Image 1 (tube, rainbow, N blue to C red):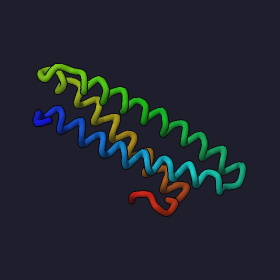
Image 2 (cartoon, rainbow, N blue to C red):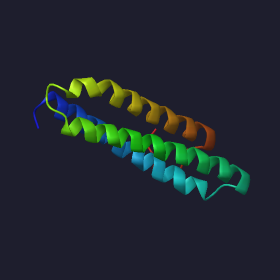
Image 3 (cartoon, helix red, strand yellow):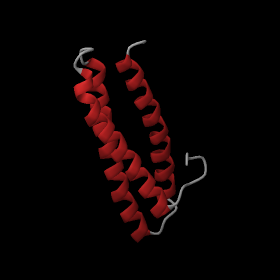
Length: 103
């Protein structure tokens, strides 16, 4: 686990684990909302799950890539990570953060 690729993938996986906890907390929060707000919230949650799936797929590709090829995949993974992080921050700003989620 000493290669740059492995370290990078592990760091992204740790960030993804944090974001998964955030998404779980946001889903709990959705149950507390009135029906109109809940519909908007659930749409945002579908968006978050889709972005999370994109990042997970990119991580899988990076994990299986040859040592000299993973750098080509790094930019796409970083963009997917930033997009997911931004979407989570936007959801928390719009709907509030339930207790127990990261800031």
